[in-house]
Image (cartoon, rainbow, N blue to C red; front, side, top):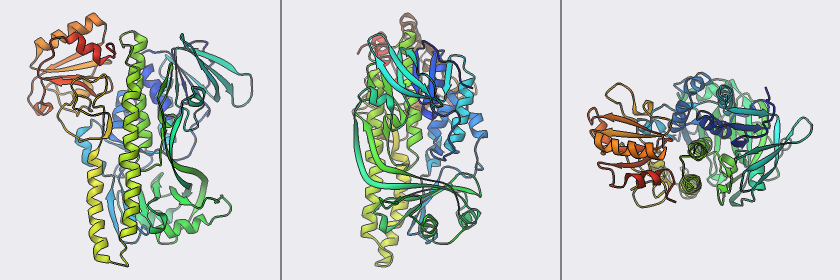
Amino acid sequence: MTDKPADRTDVIIAGGGPVGMGLAIELGQRGIPVTVVERYEQPQPIPKGQNLTQRTMEHFHAWGAEQELRAARTIPPEYGIGGLTAYGTLLSGHHYDWLKRQLVRPYYYTDNERLPQYATEAVLRERVASLGSVTTLYGYSAEAAHQDGDGVTLTIVPRKGGASQVIEGRYLVGCDGSRSVVREQAAIPLTRSDHDKLMVLLVFRSTGLHELLKRFPGKSFYNVLHPDLKGYWQFFGRVDLGNTWFFHAPVPADTTAENFDFTGYLHKAVGAEFDVAFEHIGFWDLRVTIADTYRQGRIFIAGDAAHSHPPYGGYGINTGFEDARNLGWKLAARLQGWGGAGLLDSYDAERRPVFASTARDFIEKAIEADRDFLERFDPERDRAAFETEWAERGTGATSEVQAFEPNYRGSPIVIGSAPGQPSAKGEHSFVARAGHHLAPMPLSDGRNVFDAFGPGFTLLAFGAGEEAARLAGAAQKAGVPLTVVEDDLEDGRDRYASRLVLVRPDAFVAFAGDELPEDVEMLLARAVGADQ
């Protein structure tokens, strides 16, 4: 159902896909009035953004939608988000496991999940509908945005025809995709790294392919490295179990839906023939883009509006959800009066370097490494050398999962972090480190720390009651919501290696240590951006 546009709201969100709806929930759960403008009345049935990491599922847990999302999955749980990489064809005999995210499972509170993006969107829409502070306007497109010192306006138009309308708000967030109207209206430039590749997206039905790939039990997607493609993947993924698939791959620049043998292309990639019935044939340009800033005054951008890259490694939708979680609590803090003037700037300071690192250190590095491997090694030319290097690559795929640990070292609102700047590269650890995601840990009352978090900041105090009282007093005086959780250092909690851990609303560590600084007011002011 489409609601009547509100004349005034606190936050306008242009784009009600996964990122926009995640942001609406993050704000709506905190009582912030939000209006979401979304072009489509129903989620579009294109299976993209399938792999949801353990970290993303922590968001769904916090948003009160974890169980509903798991109930919506289209593939049995034993088919996780892991896959394999093969050489030449899927059935060539040369393959290794890839994206083994189960290796980092202990550092997150929730298991990963896999389901088509349209199923994820349906769960998010249902959760949003339960929040009285969120108004949804389905079937409207953003047309123009304007801001001044007092607020923002967004002009919207019904897609089925009708007069344009204007919504007023205090902030506007563009979650409206890679061709973002909001970004263009805010005059935010993009930096583009163009790989000059036209890619096809095929959605097709095939029971025969399922039968062929039973030899790889529990796999949900499959990458093919072929020497002719210079490091760019042919990528198969399951939409459901046994019937529907999607496929990404490079195609010649002049390819259309009518002039190319897509069935033959699929057969060649697999290395065998099988039944194919197409449901969708589409195209996209392979490139990496990042906005030069994620904020322009009262206007913000998130998700694909702020950054885009090839669907390599499941980074896209998960990165967008992290944008929503990061920006959401900061907007709420500012609107509720306890966030400082510098808090909103920290969204760009934290999230933009993390995406730049993701693109540079993982996605583009993988393309370059694959290209180099294919040029140097060939089983027909030197089988022994090829197989030695192939085995090494399988080991490297494991280390890549361990190394992908987005963090906010050096953030202006993190206290006492290690030198550096926010990055996607790091190391998973149970040690509570300023600027890093907090690992889960059981409490002596049977709960996990993730179920003890309050709506604002949370202070974990292990045998440090007097210190906790000092910070609690400062928080009360400053109006900063703070939940204090006191416990001991038994049952593994000593792995945090700190008696005091101040956790942000997005489950990242703002401060960790055995003692608070003498000036706890300054520590708190720094954490909420009030000393900027």
